[in-house]
Each structure stands twice: as structure tokens, then as C-alpha cells.
Length: 230
Image 1 (cartoon, rainbow, N blue to C red):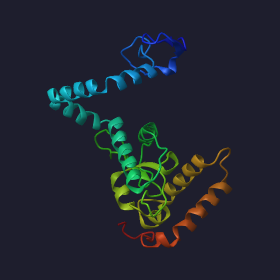
Image 2 (cartoon, one colour; image 1 turned 45 degrees about the vertical axis):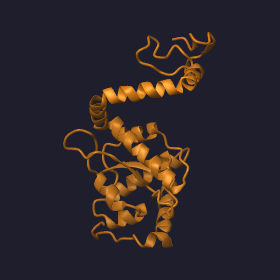
Image 3 (cartoon, rainbow, N blue to C red; image 1 turned 60 degrees about the vertical axis):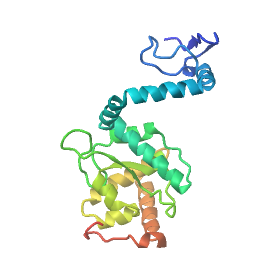
Image 4 (spheres, rainbow, N blue to C red; image 1 turned 120 degrees about the vertical axis):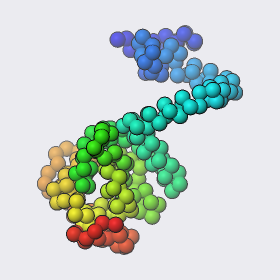
């Protein structure tokens, strides 16, 4: 497939990446380049807003049902989680580098909750994935909204962990077993470290997590292994 295309509005030949995707087109791209599309929208902003308003009014129920159906898909659930994480960032005045694709990939690739091993998915009998920030986005706890700091977990674990440091949650939850903890540490190191993941690096990372969990701002939510999770 050719890697260039000529815009039918400005007649300039550009790289195919400069044309927005559209599955209805033969080559999968719009016939107008992004620059021309932006300029058209700018010049016709009022007209386009009015068209959109009229369409939504005339098709309100259809749109609502379509939205409900979409939110029952893994893509819709990932979008809702992504939007919520961005809203939290705005509330706490934090920047974000997380993308919708990051969340969708995490939701699709995670088959079991890393904290309790419950099966995750949109199918009947499975728990629906929720977006967990390993380090909470709470403005006092320093968490960031990026791909390294997220996990797909079940709703119960997400709620129970809350703002806890992950090591303290491991200590307080009977379902967060030693085997799951080792998996969590290994995954975290692989995300952070380039090159070979050695046992020494894994143990160093684990030691750092334990030290963090003893910091004063985590003490109020510190638990003990075997106690009931809150």
C-alpha cells in the first residue's frame, strides 16, 4: 500500500499518516488531510455545532442506547476508566501521559486480578476490570497517571486497597498471596527496567517498596497479613 496520498481539497501530496483514519474509505483514510479538515471545522464551527445539536435532539434515544451498548464492551469500559483518571488529574492539578490505548491494552491483556487472582473480563461469570493506580492519584500520595502506575484489577480489590500503599495492602489481604505478590513485583520491575530482569533487581525493588510502605503518610492505612481488608 502506498505511503502517500493527495488531498482532494488542497491538492498537496502528503504522507498517509497526515490523513485521519476512516474504515469506510477504500484505503482506510479520509480524502482530506488533517490540516484541511481542521481548517474546514474552524471556518464552519457554528454550522457544525448546530448540525450536531439537531442530530442529537432527533436521535436522543438511539444515541443513548448505542452509548449503553458500547459501555458494556471492553473498549467502552476502558474509555470510561481513562476519562475518570483524567478527571482526577484535573481535580488534583496533576499532569498525565496515560493514553486510552494504554488502558485498553491493560484491560485486554490482564486475564486475572493481580491482587486476588479473580478472573477478569466482560464475559458472564467474570469480574469486570477496573483501573487501579498502584500509587494513588490522591494529591498527598504522589501517584502519577502513566502506564507504569496502572493495573487492571477487580472492583472489590480496587475499593479495598483505596489509597493504601500496595505493600500494606498485600500485608492486609489474605487473597493477595505470596505468589501474587511475586508476580506483581516481577511485572513492575519489567515495566521499569530496560535489559535483563535479574533476581537482584527484583529483590532491590521489593526492598524499596517495603521502605516506602513505612513512610509516615502510609501508616494510617497499614495492615497486617491475615487481618480483614478494609
